[in-house]
Image (cartoon, rainbow over the protein chains, first blue to last red):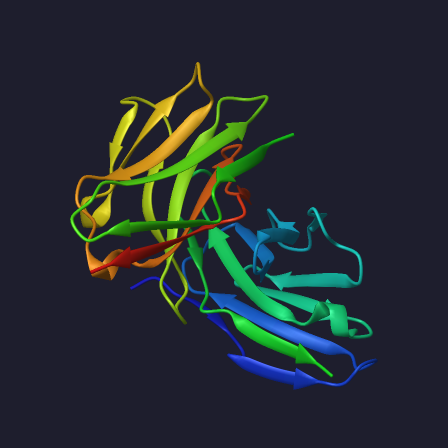
Length: 111
Length: 112
């Protein structure tokens, strides 16, 4: 069974902390994505990667960075967490135009 | 650039009634179109997708959608709603490389 796993389901951090959200896929997919989901706004693309060590900005990259050192792992970094980054974060992976698989999500609260 | 608009953030139907969730897209390239469903406290699950070929696409749980290029639409339908269909539904468009652009979502309620 294909799988995208995220390091935490729930996370509580303080304003100004550096936050790492980890995502691992076991399907040998080239493409990986980070989205945030907010009520009424749907899912918005933060960053994506089509290959190892490659990254591209999505629609809302401000305040975030990413790292992809290995094909199976894609990390989202909040350099200095702020309360407006409280959200559900979803990682996904895919092979070109095929099925995109989503992880279970990490609900991050920044206080 | 690609974009998706879902008409209606909340739709309520009676059990057994027709479900119609509307989605319009904008794309400068031939689009790949998707519907995803998210049940409460669960992740996203693919309902159906259109890539090429037949414009009427059948998905899981009795849902189907029709790609209408002239109307730039990809509406989701189900002939008879069931209580278990209550969930949030997302329409998405892709350029074919896996990057998905989502609509705002439509929450479907089913009344007994």
